[in-house]
Image 1 (cartoon, rainbow, N blue to C red):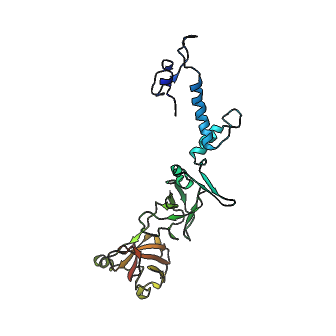
Image 2: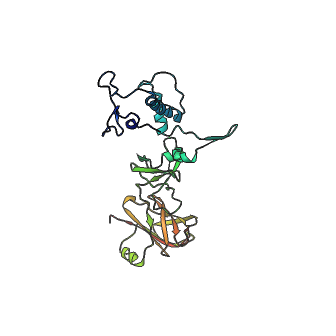
Image 3: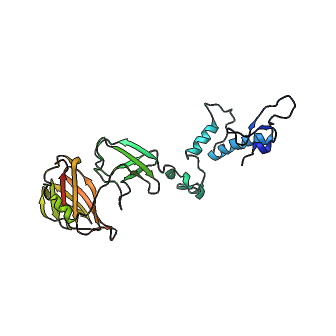
Amino acid sequence: MAIRPDTTYPGKINAADANYSYGSARNITAPGDGTGTPLEQAWLNELFGMQQALLKGAGIVPSGAVETQLASQYAQAIAELTQGRAIHGTLSGGPAAYTFALPAALASMAPNALFDGLVIEFQAGGLNDADPTIDAFGLGVKDVWGPNNLITTPKLPASYWQNTQRIRCTYNSVNGVWIADNLSMPWYRPMDQSEYRKLTWQTPHASAYIDSTGVIHSSQNVFSCVRAGIGDYTINFTTAEPDMFHTQDYVWLSGRQKFAEVWTRNYTSRRFRIWDAGVAAWVDSDFYFMIFNTLT
């Protein structure tokens, strides 16, 4: 609640203007003329109420010392409330394990929710050699997911960002993860016959026809294929790529609803998984794989 000066003190305040929508205090014109804004109970209680609401909301007991700019409990209360550190809820459990629950009305003040949409940027210190995680601002260790074009299992795979690459991540409180939204997670779409014929005049860096069990039936610069699980294939090259950043990968799949998602990409191998949108699941499939150098 809050009083309105223009209705609480009619005739004893300055009229509303652009700076004060409900009027502002004024001095008397002459001693005893009654034109000044009175210093009385409602006026003081308005100030006291606001101050005490801040202290109560932040769970702070006033020290009894006069406020200064160097030691202000009101400034502390504002900081606590606006940064979400002062939240009152329901305590249960014990004697060793306790649960602190927020009222439904304060769900948006939960630590996880407070960081929703927060963006962090950093420069990668090298090729990520494992599934990346970020521990920022007391949120704990959180997975990093790829952009939203991933269908399922969106955790960002190893070997996806490179040394000195600028990474931008946005926190998603619903899933409790960081989304690397400035990266591009490529999907190898099905390739039709006409596209295949356009590529046959080039010499690929590597190519192979592999059946659904991972057995190689024909290949060029491919010495093995490892099937680690359903639809999960790793192709290993005989000779490493000279330039991984100027190559284009193609996967020719049977069935127009199948896609291959890159999982790990480096100079000596490719790992990807095959997704069937028709059944919304990872699936085994035979495929033809090719890599071309885009500079030739």
